[in-house]
Image (tube, rainbow, N blue to C red; front, side, top):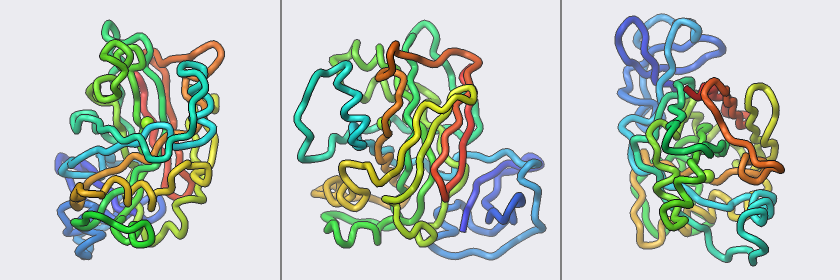
Length: 273
Ligand code: MG
């Protein structure tokens, strides 16, 4: 099932998405609806009449992994030269203030970055307190999946020693949604088409099967000595086709529209302003 957070008639609610409608429910958040169950509290509302909000509330940690799709790792050679494949995932975080709704505008941060880049990602939402997960048991800790963008100011990143946190933590650079999809509805998180277009032109198109480290392996590695809590989010990496790796490089400008899709989950769409 799909669980959304939305604003309608001046108030914020949680709802179950059914086709092109959303049914208001009693749960305080989409994650609570998945974990605790919930009852409908009102009549269906057309999705066209609501504003979908980020489906994670409150926003907890936003863990991320770099270079997790093999073709994307290869396209990084444009900037970084030839490198051996990593034997462990390269983790970092985004500041929680980056999170915005699935159809919200993304600030261009003109004057701070001239190299705002797109990165479509599958977001993994943790459903229970856990630590030291085994790879074989790791997916049992996942409550839901969503679509996200890990927008990055490449020049900001490179101006601060190359460490990723700064360039990936600009306000409004993590749209997420359009809703949470129950993990039980995703039979195999390693078999989903994932894509991103800018102004209607496809820039990234791949499949989660080309991840270097599976979601299960990522969670096993991340949770070693690090307790994960319900609502923590892991962005599982971006596939090939980012602007930085193109010839010539391409970046986002005010007015550009970025559309990001993971098959079986949904599509988010954000205008750069
Ligand atoms: Mg990323």
